[in-house]
Length: 335
Image (cartoon, rainbow, N blue to C red; front, side):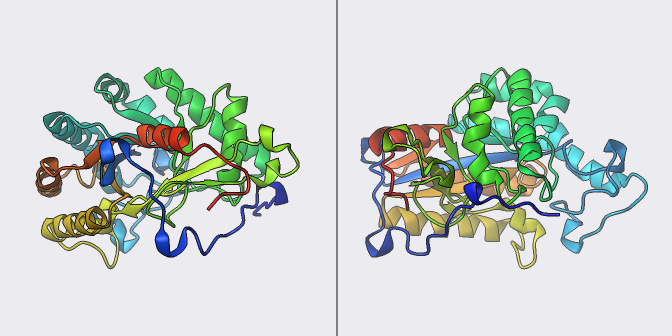
C-alpha cells in the first residue's frame, strides 16, 4: 500500500520562470553547463540470485521487449549487466580521461560494493559520487521510516565503499515522499544535502520550498535545490535540464543506431548553446553507452563541443555549489 504524508507532499508548479526563463550566470560567462552522468547500476539490479522473484526486465538489450524470467536465474540478463561492470565502465572512464573531463556517478550502493576497484577509480580520477539508491529496486510502498532508513543505508554504504559522502542524488525509483525526505535523511546521516535531481521540468536549476519547513522562521528554512534535467535533470535544489538519455536505445520509440543518438546530442546542444544560460544533462549507462559503437558516437559528440567557446563541462556538485553561492535560498521564491 502506498503511503502519503502531507508534510512531504510537494506542490506542482506549472509556470516555472515563464517566458524570460532564468540566467544561472555560469562561471567565466559560459553559455552552457554540460553535465555527464554515469548511472552505475550493475550488480544492483533484480535477480533471483539476490532473492528477487524475477530477473531484471528493464534497460538491457532485450529489455525493450520486457523479457524476464521468474523462479530461476536468467543468465542472459545477468550477462548483459555484467558487460557494464566488466567492460563498459572502463571504456567510459578512459573516454573521459582522454578529454580531461569529470562526470557525476549516480551510484547504486550495492553495485559499487560489488566492484570496489571501479568505485575507487572514479574517486581517483575526480569523478563525483552521487546516490542512486541502495539497490536498483522499486520502493513505492515504503512508509516514511523505511524510506528514510533506505536513504541513510545508501549514503553510508557509498561512503564506506568510496570514501566519499554523496552530496546529491537521483533516485528514479522512490515513493511519493522520497524527494522531500532527502534533506532530513541526509542530516540524520550526519551530512548535508547539496542538491537533488529528482525532476525533469526545467533547463536550469531552481530552489523549492519544503512543506515540512513551513512553520519554521525564515532564518531556519533551508529549502531544497532542484533542477537539472537529465537530458533529463531538475531537483530542492533541483537539477535537471535538457536531457539526452542513452536508455532510449532500449525504449520504444527510441534511438535506432548510434548515428541517431549522436545527432540528437548535437541538436540538443546547438539549441541550448544558442539560447545561452542553460544546462544540458547527459545520462549514461555502462552497459548501454559502454558498447563500442555507442561510445564512439559519444566521443564524436565530445569532440564536437570540446573546442567551442563558453562550454562548461562539470559535475553536478560543482553546478550546485555555483548555484547555491550565486543564488542563495530565499523562502517563498522557489520555482
